[in-house]
Length: 145
Ligand code: DQA
Image (cartoon, rainbow, N blue to C red; front, top):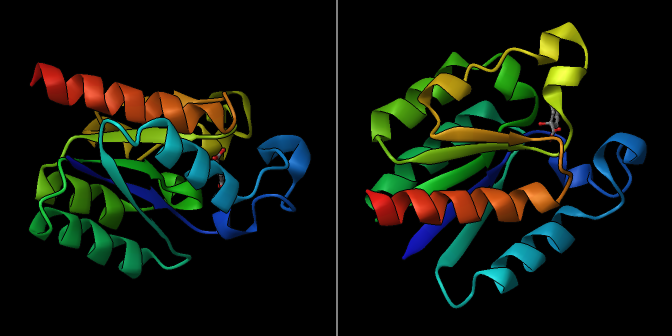
């Protein structure tokens, strides 16, 4: 089974970007850990982009490639992007939303997610651990479907 792990804008800077909020691990560290953790259960493809359109295109491609589901940290696009939300509902692939920080305890503008209504669920506030939890939740959802 193949899953897509998508990361949005500025997450390429993890490790040095506001470490008190987002931690000191790099995106590569996080991806390697999650790929290793689930290597017996699924293949995880990864894509990061700072561009909304590239993320939309990659979601479309996931459907064509036969991915079973998506884990996405949409980063700032969480709070702005109808296009990402529509892409997820268009491909109709089960999607789990993940955030390193707890978006509900931060600034008001971060507390609304355009993605949440089209996601199976959201994991927010557990740092890099959340990525593993998100994959686990997606696999569990796919097994029950
Ligand atoms: C984030 C939270 C967003 O509000 C922010 O814009 C990010 C990262 C998180 O993982 O905590 O870039 O998605």
